[in-house]
Structure formats: C-alpha cells, structure tokens
Length: 357
Image 1 (tube, rainbow, N blue to C red):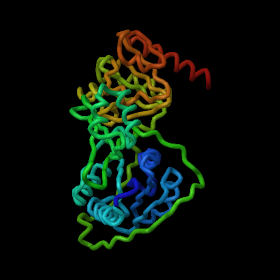
Image 2 (cartoon, rainbow, N blue to C red):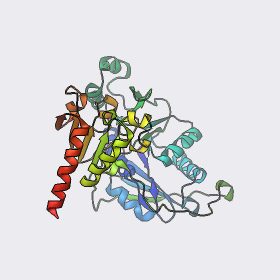
Image 3 (cartoon, rainbow, N blue to C red):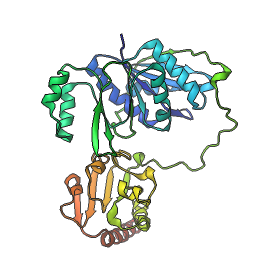
Image 4 (tube, helix red, strand yellow):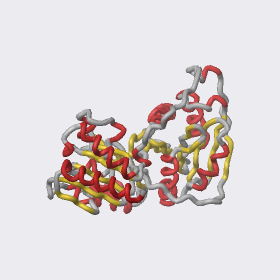
C-alpha cells in the first residue's frame, strides 16, 4: 500500500535549494493530516552530508542516492534513479520544486511509472475542511457540491494551480494512481523554521548505472561569474505596472531599489509588452514573493498579480486611481502619479542615506 510523502531535493554545487526546504515544511503539515511520514530524496555525488539539513527542515527520513554519474544534473541518470526508488518504496505523494530541474525530471518520472503529474502548483491540501477554508477565501466554488461528490473524509492530495493564462485556478486530484505527483512553485510555501538537532533516519539506496545511462557527455562545467538574481529571495521589491508608462521608467525604479537594497520586479502586462524580462514577473503566471517591503508602482492589482505578492510583510502602493484593487491589500496607499512621486522618493532616500554617512 502506498504510504508517506516524499520530497525530491534539488541541489546545486552541494547546496540544497530553498524550494526544497519550503516543500519539506509544507510536507510536514500534509503528512500530519495523513498520519504519515515525510521522506526526503537526495541525489548527487558526495552529497550525504546534506541529509541532516533536510531532517532539520522537516524530513523524518532521508534516502540518499550517491553515484559519480549524478554529480551534475543530467536527465536520464536522475530519471532512472528516482524511478527505481519510487518502484521500490511505493510512496503516496511525491513533490518537486517547479524549477528548471523539477520541470524536466518530474514529467519523465511520471511517464515511466504511469501516474499523473500536476505542474506549477500554488496550493496543496489533504484535509477537506482546510481545503474549503482555502476555497472560501479565494473563490466562489460551491463547497457543498464538492463535499457531496468527494465526501469530507477524502484524503487525496488537492493540487491547485493556475490555468488558462492565470485566469482560472484549477484543483486537480489523482484519485486512481499512485504516487500523486506535483511540482510546486518556489516561494508559494512559507519557509518553516529549522529545527536544529532534530533526529531522523538516513538510508542509502543503490542504483546500478551503465555507461548507456549517460546519454550526454559533459566536457566542461562553466560556473556563472555573476549569479542571476532571484526575486523570490529579495527583501525589498520595487515593482512596476503599466502605470509607469514605458520600459525606460524601470531605470527610475532601479534607482529606488538600489537605495533600498532591493530588486525591481513587474506585473505580467509589462512582461507581455516586452518591457522587462520574464524572470522579474510577480503573480500566478510569474513568481510568488514574500519580501519585507513590496513597493507597487502603477499596478492596478489584478487578482493574478495579488496572488503572487499578498503575503509580503509590508505593501506600499502608488496609483492615480483611488479605487485600484491594489489598495485593498496595501498597508499604505498613495494616490498620485508615479512619475511625480518616484522622483521625490529618490530625492528623499538619497538625502537620508547621505545624512547617515
């Protein structure tokens, strides 16, 4: 019988990715609703030393697969290793981060073990009452009809993800096949506080590889000299919407971000217009962020955008429209023209920093 909730770790250069730690924290809640354990899966070469970090993040057990062929991520060896592990242990649920690696690995594994996969999830539930609380807060779904169809004792994983360009939120169940599999977007699950000294089991799992399993030849690994910015890690985000008028105005927002020690981000409209790169997009079809400060400049507050930033510690919004939806989720709202207010903010911040020095 399928049991336990598995989280597949993503690691680069021996460091566990933040999304893995987020998933381990969320997995402990889901596992509690099932009365099952959280199992981490750690693949690589010389990586076993990181098992304790996963235990302290929430895993009850970590299964380690080590082999020189897993030193760098290559699709086929990783797919073979994880497929073998799933066939051996028969987990109930398997979660991946919706990163470039997770989006490559998860569908291939799902195809080999003949189960379903829900990609790019933004919310997960087991308990029906908790699921209904989520629905009541975010939708107009008929929960009575859902309860009648599923029953309140349903224990399948309810996997919610945006669909139709983020205009609809769909909840998907995998009732007939195991494991239930999902990729989850980085940043949507709150990072749980680590538990230093937490005890857990570490188990080795051996996979026999052949030269044919390495279907590519790695001649050289070139590390980036400049690390790409991930807006999900930023403590301060200065975000621009269509109200900033043009792509050029991001230069002014960048000045504010630099003064505050933050990064710039964007609504979907500006990404679609080609004003800024996709990796700066906040929202259901972009990234979910939780900065200490989110400064929304000329953003109207479409529900798809709000879903990606509403858990920010402090939201300050600037918009000419005093009925803009963004003000409903703001701690401070400023009604006015971004192009009048931002220069004054830059001037004030510059003077403040000069005075501090």
